[in-house]
Length: 456
Image (cartoon, rainbow, N blue to C red):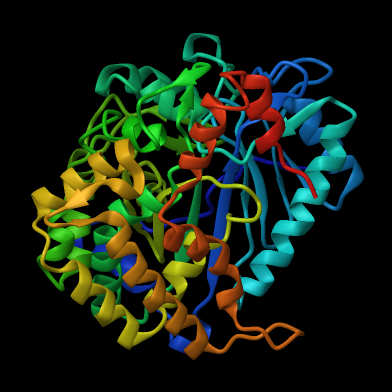
């Protein structure tokens, strides 16, 4: 069965701020139903050149998706008669604007489930890509192809976003076309729980940047940053990105987040299989006045929330977004760290004790410094690595207490250990890449591609 891009079924009209707050309340789940979802992006390049792969052509991204659909039980999704995504009952494979391949995993009971899913995904994409001569890089950015030579994927929403992001910051197109992240998604039990988790996730964002920094090579040369992906986000669109100060101030987080989101300009409105430009109006204006004879619905609100890019994002669950994408071995490191902390009450409080003394200005500056210096960035008298070591120990404790065991009776801390080794050694992935770039690789992008390409 083939699928077209989703068209929303009937959705209630938005009439008040309370309607928008209720959207978040409706996402609350009892602890027994909490799960974790992991989403990971990866640059796709030609193996022989390291150049980014376009959508078109016999070796393009469109053909790659078709190969996955032909070989494995994925259902195709079309837009304007072009294959743009794949789905099964609980997961999807989608395209970022520059052809980065994103796997949005199922909602898992444990990280063991997420790990099994990751391994299956890697085997599938390696099989589909082998005949095309393409490979997938365990990096947070496409390392060789400059922005003006990067491809654009043929998706309606990206055409609108492309025009807007050319005006909102100097790195909007870089963000869209080159960057790759690993994101972890978590449930909450009520508004107070959502506030406490969002507060810690937002406060941890400079730590996550530092420990995951994995994007130092851009346009074929060192960028001066260990996470250039994080640097890019800081000059993409200040109206919808970064650390949100109110996340630390009020337990009425649903109302505060809704009021902030109401005044962020909309990108588009989805109707009848098409994305329509919003004309730059805010969601508040859409609610109050409408647009194109259309009235705002909760489905529009859900779409609008996906176009906001703070370091931690609130929907009907919490998304932690600050980390660079990683090698397969390290991919579950930051999701494991956050699960250990966010899903254990004592650990959540312990993490906040570590991070609460920082001011908002210090958090913002720490994020900028961590993008440049990784674990060597400093906050007050300590380096990021000192805080990271404390938080890794807290995360380990939380995972052990949650006692989700695999068939070998190992708890989920096994998925944290590769990251923990790096943190206690005082290095991030970018440190290793830069060391080898300057020494044995002698600045050869081909060596970087060969070393970071996915393999089993």
